[in-house]
Image 1 (cartoon, rainbow, N blue to C red):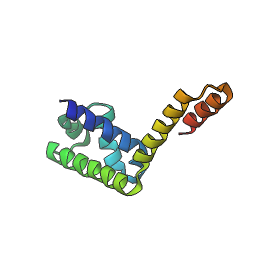
Image 2 (cartoon, helix red, strand yellow):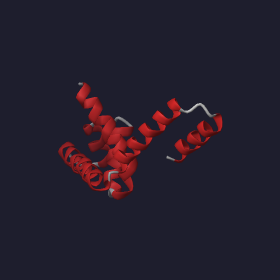
Image 3 (cartoon, rainbow, N blue to C red):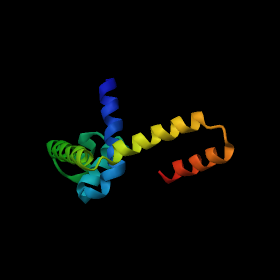
Image 4 (spheres, rainbow, N blue to C red):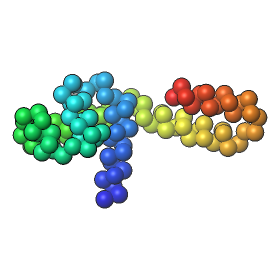
Length: 108
């Protein structure tokens, strides 16, 4: 159960970075499933396709997201930047520097 939740969150994070690289259909189905929390059957009814077709399309889209991440590393780099900023914020007491770090976080 916890592993499913972890994967669900990870896919949403990857989607945030790479959704423009998916097809319109893949983006639509990913939104239904991962953001709107529709079931495969509900999506199949909405799109007038089989439940199995929905499953296959989602599976291919998720595979693409992981493939893009393995090549481009956008999510990985974002996590590294976040961790560095968090560490810096804990160790710095100068308010002006902290304000600049806060601004940098907003850019991310």
